[in-house]
Length: 186
Image 1 (cartoon, rainbow, N blue to C red):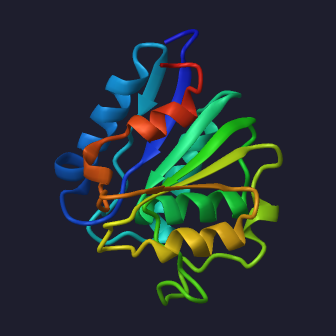
Image 2: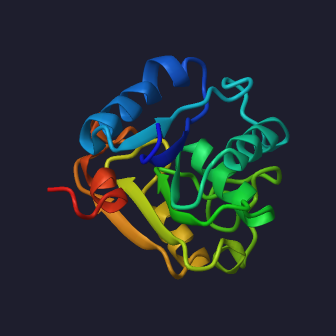
């Protein structure tokens, strides 16, 4: 799709997440953005048991196929693993934006765990000049809204979008996300 802006959407984890949950987020994003955008939605390996060891290399392969100006988006644990991969090894292309949706923060104050633990200087490790947006539904019962605050501390340049009345799946409505990806769209 020549002339279209690329969006890479990394799914969340859990059995059926790609085909029964996050596909609705991707469908909403495609509808909101229109034909000028190419939304790529790869299936992550072993989605029911996400691990950085398996998902990190898959994400890096997908990042390597993006051109300058692409937007990378991750939902839930997919966002956590995506931002970890970006901090560990930034892509060669120049990203327009990083968008995390309902991403659990793994580390001090967030979810326990060592495999996905995010570095304290996360914001400094992300590609310079790249806009960072954090979206979190205030009715999220999977990754509590305080995770957005933890990310905001770790990524001071991030803009936080708290969505009242929205759940972990943002009620399958990506209109606010589309507006930050394409600020010129009505």
